[in-house]
Image (cartoon, rainbow, N blue to C red; front, side):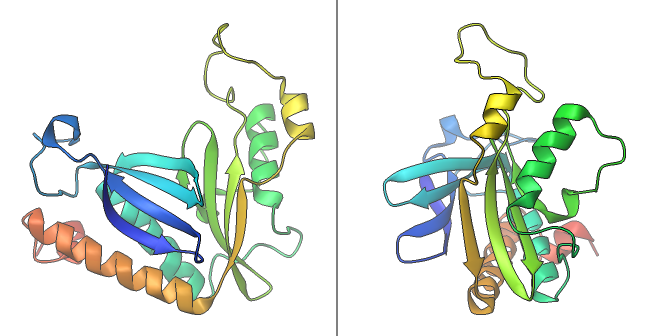
Length: 205
């Protein structure tokens, strides 16, 4: 896989945006893939912790980076704060319990999420004037059929062993750097995709 962008969290941890290193392995959601990166190409998002890689998402470039950009703008503008009754690490627990029980009166958590796949969900939010990036585990069989060949665990056992995959307090300086990186790479990819910039790809002139 080729590295498209790396968002440094610390000296050892980072979020990496990856794309296949040859056209044959690339996926474009609306057209044939090419050598250059396109807004409709599929990207993979990975949390890199020393020698451990955890996949966070695999989706279209436009959504993958655009959603990250939107979330960063919100937290930097002091939006996306957790309500007073919720604490850090609560979102993943709420998500799993609400999804498992299909609670119709549940608190809307989507405003805090960036990426999601079968096994993880990634959040970016504020609490007590601090910015947090959190990766929570998802119960694998919330929406997937149980495969008898898989090592199945009950929801109750999953929640008893529940803990965040990762939790980081992100400084404002790092969040601003990430937003700058997002803006630059999105504009570059938009130009390769035939637009003047990323904003023009969303609202063509």
